[in-house]
Length: 323
Image (tube, rainbow, N blue to C red; front, side):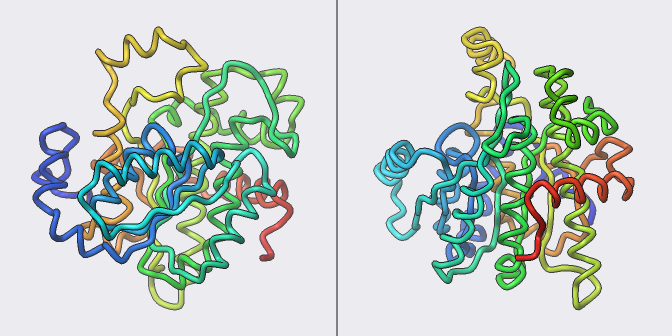
């Protein structure tokens, strides 16, 4: 599928608002849609939830802190005129695979559909640290936790089709190194010895894109018809001033952010667009977008051998995918 037409697909602030207003009635058609957003209590995720709530969606906020998320939900409700949309909290710590499994279990027990899964949560760390299972934290949260969550909920996404998986990547993936990513994924010692804040983050975003391509290909190969009804997109939402950068440069980024970065409120519109907008219904294969515009990802990400190697490593790390 080609990128959306320039009249609709643009990253300018005014046009982004126009998308939401011009298509408001159309988007309200998705009021019966269930959307799960990870990392929904702050930054991009929070603003994504705000937009979805105004549209009348049923939103699952998958986050670590219950108290923080409940405060966010109450604040959104208090400022909204929409009295029919729903929000629910589910506990999710992507640095603990047992928490990921429990989150998926709790959701499936609800017996409701899942029309979009927005894999938004992420970390960018100054120092090396490890997940509950002993893997490098940036890789574990940004890629592996989402890899497991998506696969645990894939049956529900297929059952609820047409549905979508939106993986929040970054243009930083183009600075990733595939050989290094795969070596670090296989060797914790190598990941620790060679840890670099920027390179580790870029490699984790590269993992997002490789995973998205691998997922889309498997969905289409296993579909009962020419293409899967579960669409997969990886999205660079823009360079956004969020708390993701706090551990890196702290207040310095906050000052620069007001000058050079996009606001989370504006950037989150791209995530909403890819999660629910009817214009991209029926998208085939995996597409990489910079906000609303389809772009080429790093050349090596199109190679199946790299997609498959990361998939195999990830499958082993989560203990298999026979669910």
